[in-house]
Image (cartoon, rainbow, N blue to C red; front, side, top):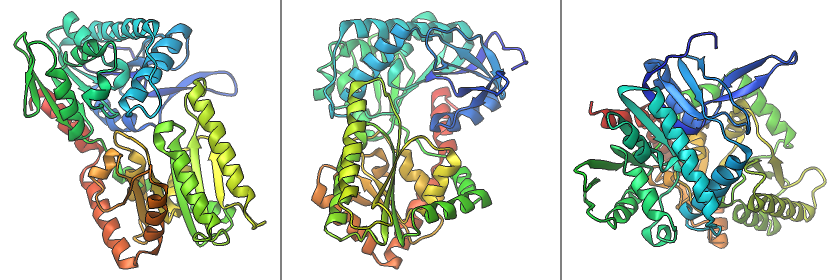
Length: 467
């Protein structure tokens, strides 16, 4: 942090959150460490190579933090007030856009004061990028919270190359059209030179929506605007640092932790594993019900099988998320209370966050990974499991509504709304022959390692900058 922050940068990432977490030592000294998230893992090498700047919120309301240098690039904090957090983040971003973009699994809420805050905060982010960008710089805007930034930034700085990537699904026009501010959001993203989505269906959904605007024409991955600009719109499926995950999972520390975890679970012969942020889009309740019924019918024997479910806390101030937490608590408790085994519960449920090393150890002991979102832009958990689980006697049960299903075609696909179908597929995956399991895992592993996070970032930026 002692290095001088550059006044201007040739490469800028703009995201809702900064790539760092604040750490307070025992003696009260403050420092910052790199966040463990997937986006940070993807973009940090790019930032370090280019020496750019990352613009975002540092995570605490009503506080201003001065810019600082971190690990080869600059950190530019954008302050948010408590009211901004309530209306921009918890409100419009996660009470309006998140459910709308996830097929209205929960009912989106449309409040005008949320929209006003969303627009004002987006302008603040755009101004920060305009202030810190060199002439002709590349600016890469990330995700649904900043939908309006590209257009605002282009109006401020028409010299910039602007890219936008949406990490969550973009809904069909029939759903998106419910949004009172649909035109402003589409026009906001069209301020970009390149718009990226997770899979082709989102591309076609967005182009259909864009073509409803006056004077906009589009086909084959691009739209032409009335002002003469052409915007490229393509799919760029995001991935993981596959080699890094494999190296972590096979390290002596993780292998030792994996053995300890298996022992803590009672040394079962078979472990099923699920890990999700506690969000209604992840299909957690349906998954727990399906597996609970398998234990109740004794198709899964609780004397030999354990289902380990890790749920990481999420948006705990939002009522829908608190209700979901209570629902899962009651569901797990009811299932475990019916078990006749005194040695252990059939479902080992953990509502907490764990270090990356512990997560890798959990992947290592999982004989069957169950990933069943009701809707997901990609779902990197599925890819992480494939990278971490080095043995071929493993299986992945995957929702057909996750973006990862388009790439991990050898997974055992399920419709997460179909409880009986999910139960049958889980049992099929457990009973499959070792030869078939090995073939499927090898094919998925090749896909994940051939299409890693470096390829994702490099492909997008090459397209944006015309290399």
